[in-house]
Length: 229
Image 1 (spheres, rainbow, N blue to C red):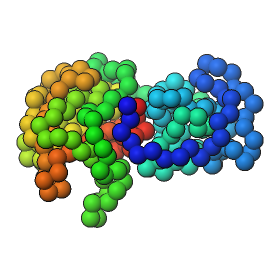
Image 2: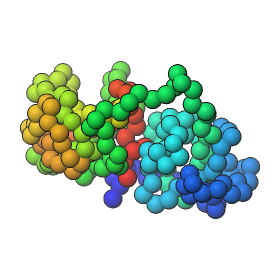
Image 3: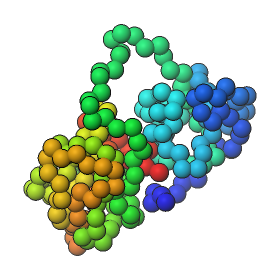
Image 4: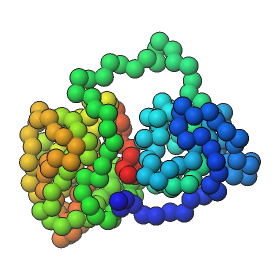
């Protein structure tokens, strides 16, 4: 179940390629093309698909898909929406990826807790844009690891964020969990997806209990709604 704010799909559903291994079919009419259309194939979003999953299936960087379709930081994709998958450029030796860490995982992200988004990615808190999302929840609720990995940071007092946990997923991705009332793991510990790693706390919004959650790619904040089901 998704807890994201619903937004209307801005393209008509058409029959298009469903995965990278399926030959591309006739594209939609010009007036139904995603903005900033470029050379590539069209894909109709299936129920429950995320941009993260689609990018992995096609072997194309998520950022390239976002740019090709003119998606804003706060944009979401919807079942039936048509997006373009830009043609993957030939890889050169200089672009070759570094060897993934031993603890690299290959699994989807899940919601770390059930609740309503009360602050979206990019929403400003004073002069600082939100680098993740804030999810309301009952104080003391379990916070789950969104993906398997290794705890690389645990700190009781992070300025502006309180008790914070950061998990490295071994493939250049990290997740951040802040404003906890209690931390249940320690630095260096390997954790599994859905494992309880902390308890929801409150702070920064009066008496409201919530989790501040971030997804980072090579330490650069990403919009979590592009990765969550």
